[in-house]
Length: 117
Image 1: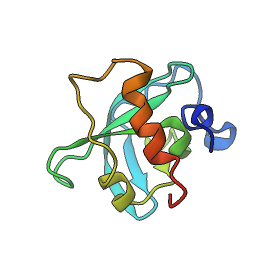
Image 2 (image 1 turned 90 degrees about the vertical axis):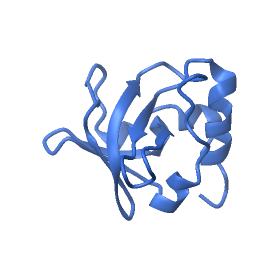
Image 3 (image 1 turned 90 degrees about the horizontal axis):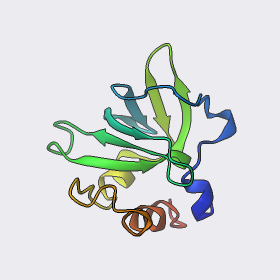
């Protein structure tokens, strides 16, 4: 997946521009990881920020839109194509650096584009 693709929603994911995903539950390939705390539709930088709650001690994780495989608006769930372990090992989301532009997001693109993913 290219860097551009990682930041865009897949056509068959069911994403509709303008939908508010905040509060939706997030399901990894092997179980629930938390709820969406933030959502960005920025062109070339679309992503969600997930509050993992007690699963990894209140850590927040950033998932590029390209990791989303399906959005269920009826159940208010977002399904991602990564395992809990892959998400747990992702770079830590830092609220202070969030919004810092493309350089901050590059670490997430590099991580989620790794071949072992």
